[in-house]
Image 1 (cartoon, rainbow, N blue to C red):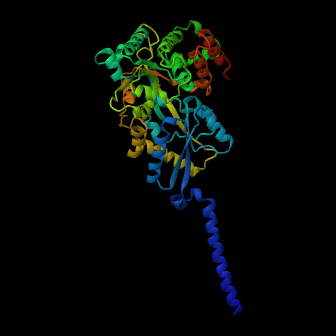
Image 2 (tube, helix red, strand yellow):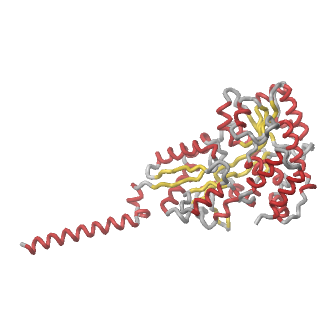
Image 3 (cartoon, rainbow, N blue to C red):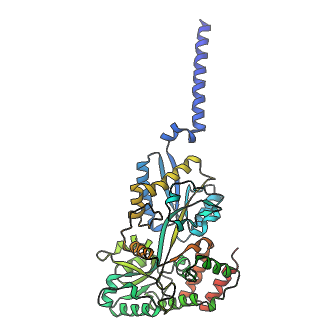
Length: 441
């Protein structure tokens, strides 16, 4: 009897041992086990450096999770005033790298050893060709082109129609003098002409870079200009395009609604002023529409004019709006496991190929997509205006963004702030720009 009981106990022990062994295998290799993957929730993170669409991305993440219940997406905002490069670098240093990192064009190559090779993804073939020039590093596509954006002088058409006594034609402004005449007409009806937002990223990454982009229609020549600037071979004091742009900026400063305290306004002041029709123009990009819309109750008629750099309407830059892929998403391969990487790929494909993903990208976040297969067109007036310039090939291509140092907008944005506030003159600004580039590593 004892032998029988012992035999039964041994049998049960063997069965439990085998079951435990199976369970241990499932736990250790669950990330690649299809049964576990199908039921286990995988959490991925997205570092978002486009603060103006934080709420829209959070909503997109919820919709994606509803359609993919085993994947949750946390959207982490980059702090205001902090460059995404600094944020992501700090997260890597702490061992907490985001699964997906949204970065500026010039940052991508710096993470080539940390980002996943995405060359085999379907969307690579569907991307607009020139949007991948930044994403391709050492022959591999390591980033997803998230958005195409443009910037210039946003105008409120209702204000301009009243100022001009009829239907305002934005193509009539192609010189500095014509722009100043528009400012005068706006002020003649009791409205302030212009808001200049003093954030370093707006002044350093957007306004100043027009001086780079307008050097030539040939992107290779623009890249050479920056290379020469780095080598100390460029004399900005005698550069026609740079001085033309800064002459326009000087004129803009005179009509700035906040000229008596030009560094005080926050970003939020701009959409309120232009949306309520308290200014006729605001230098900013199409990403600002969600904020403008909050203050616009009836008009919804806005558009862009380029920042003219001379009084010759035929000069390159006077008819062209600055446009380029502005944000890219890389997938981490060093601190996120294979299942998280696959989940991130699925999220990016969802944005490009699903109806709900395209709706989240284009209609909700008001992003101009970088993919040929997406037929949805943003319905907001600013994106439509940028799209029209693109259709007419009237664009300043921002391909040179790939070689802008990560601290360009913060360092030279600070120099532009000093110039805006009158703390340095043109020579002082030139010295700071030239010295910055000479010391770029």
